[in-house]
Length: 271
Image 1: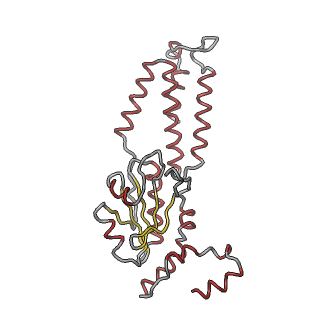
Image 2: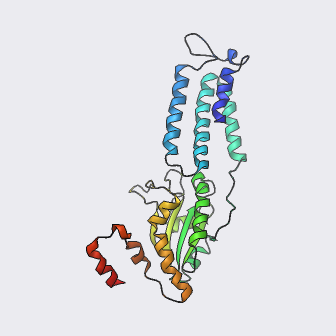
Image 3: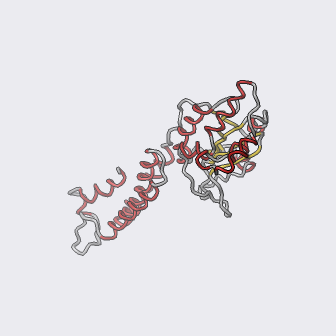
């Protein structure tokens, strides 16, 4: 909201607004013309659409600031080319020098490098890994970090472990696991469920063009989609020295309320 107030202050500040050019019919440079109002309305619509997919409060605020900067650049250029260049320069300098904070909270997560990920994932074929492929420059990854950390605290056990790999730093890992780090593909963050180094499932899914299909990275969706409650209960058998059930069988099991009644005896027989 502070970014919106930049051009707003110039337009409403006596002593400054009188010296600004105006395209209004009454030449009132201290009021917005119809084009400027149109830009602000368009900005508001874009922010509302983007915030529908936002998960955290930080993402909501980040979307507002991002698109407010874009609108202000356009508005400043309409007012005065020099003001537009000055504001654009300040935005670039701010983007380069002010890096977003990295999540430093408690977690049970193993951080992989390009030389350790394959060895660790294949060390024990019975251990299941949920690995996040992320990049520090991605705001979506930064917003997802506390959610993934919280999941690791709740579900980490001997048979179910959590890992992360920064594909912004280890590009070879991204190629091996077919995760495109390009912002245009929108594949970051990507969650892969792996066992014995083999991919069992991933989210988000990809379309034919290699772009990510929209998916919400909320804690509830991840627990449901990856069947974490069921996997956690079954893999706790590791602590008792028992062999857990096959992972693919666990993922293929539908929730009890969704299972057809006629299939219930068969599933019990299989168990």
